[in-house]
Amino acid sequence: LPAGAGTWNAALRWRRLRNRSVADEPDRLRNSGNHLVPAGEAGTKVNLPRIRPARTPDVRAIRGLIDEYSGDGHLLAKAAVTIFEDIQEFVVVEVDGEVVGCGALHVMWEDLAELRTVAVAGRHVRSGIGSMVVTELIQRARDLGIRRLFCLTFMVDFFVEHGFDEIDEAPVDHDVYEQLLQSYDEGVAEFLGLERVKPNTLGNHRMLLKLR
Image (cartoon, rainbow, N blue to C red; front, side, top):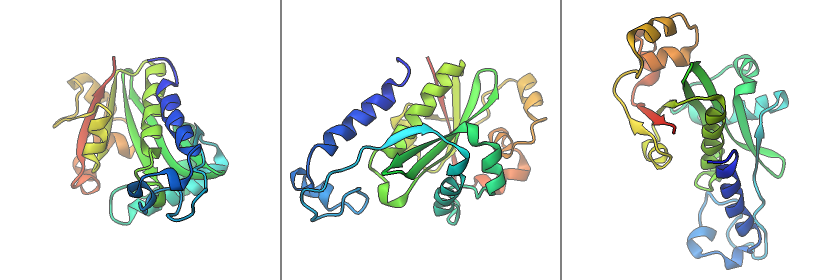
């Protein structure tokens, strides 16, 4: 897959939407509460989302997206300082200059990384933003030489659509497991299934994507 190809295809679909008015969209789309354009505003154009690496001014918007889902346990709450420390791992999606989606790629070992903190503003859910984020992060992983991508999620069907499969145990041998135990990262502890983080992972599904 050429670099950026998945993101380009997602953006192309948005261009096609952008060039059609709301009146041209099917009722299912116009009446969806998750669509970018409110129903009934005939002639309003859908704006093209743009994905890019996150920058430090995006931290508060990323924190806001996380807060939308941390209350019900779908995402772990993150302090702003933690996001600042990890900002180089994040990508964000903008619509009209507003950050409406985010996600991060955290490398854990030579050929292993985790997709984490994938979040989309509630009013933009099911608009393709989440897929743009995941596609971009998968390509980043390929560019880094990653061969296995892990995620811990409630959104099983969404990640299955992107090629992930459910797994039971941490897919690493004993030697790598022992090395990963030295990490202070909470996400790595969740990947290993350590007892101290079990309350964080209740109800989540462990999933893995093997890259070719």
